[in-house]
Image (tube, rainbow, N blue to C red; front, side):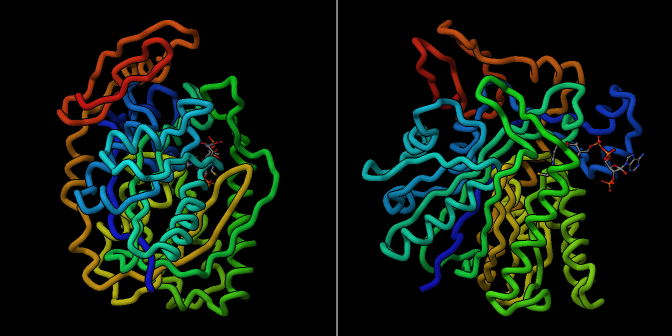
Length: 389
Ligand code: COA
């Protein structure tokens, strides 16, 4: 029985800034951001969008009544959790109208946890093939104003319905993962902003990639010639390029050219959104499947997931014939093209806003213009109130 990704939804807030304009205000050569970092636009989340609302909005794009009945597991991967105790998945379960007899759980391991959710989903479906699992990767990447990480922020969520006999990507059971306790990036409980040792995190990412790829090749007796395309965790698109270069350094010309040929379509969405942490690898996969040419039947895609701290995993899947018919390319292009550009001043104001850290109630100004978007409306008596605007 094949198990894999049957549907893919995506949401990003309706505000963005232009990276060249950010560079000008920061006194940086614009090419550093657009070429050196590889980002064109950066999504900005207003206070009324958080990890829960973005995940719900991504899921609402794809769920139909049959999914709502068949899903009995909601797995939400995030490092932007909104409560120390209650899982964001419980709110998403309610906001998306999934039937009551379902489990709802949140997973955390920096940018990696949606990949763990996929592994759990596969195990669950192999035991209960008639069931489906909703997997979400949802985050707001925030390093703060005037920091080294500032040009690598972003916000958004990817929602995936996993099922037996998937229509988009059948996942293999070939994955190789590794864990190592390092301090390249983390966010202490007291802080709204991530702490990062940027250069070390880049190197750690590449070290994990080399390690799991080496082990993967050995265990599965595969090499680059077995892959039509590769997708990576994309904290910023230049990182994806570094990863691809590292893997193809000793590849044949033919393999290197084929794999490099898919790089641009695989980062098209990431370039316009920025880092969405847990969803970044899956946004790159979505971008490849929607913006790339139709992949040959049964083409194998290799996927590298990395979460600082750190856990890495290399795994793969084969595209299903006719997968393009099940992608929402037009909707995702419209989502990105209909956003409103913020001035750098507006962005700076939004980035510094935060919910009260004490017991004060708050009613939020909901900035979203699209009706039906799930938003955080406010907090009363310490309870978050979510609903459609
Ligand atoms: N034109 C073109 N490229 C330029 C440039 C210009 N005018 N000026 C600089 N660059 C290039 C640099 O050569 C460098 O390229 P390289 O990475 O291929 O060497 C790149 O732009 C970044 O410059 P650098 O000086 O290294 O940037 P930085 O010190 O500001 O840090 C990050 C960049 C990514 C480390 C930083 O933004 C960060 O910490 N981000 C968050 C952490 C992260 O995302 N880690 C990823 C692993 S999970």
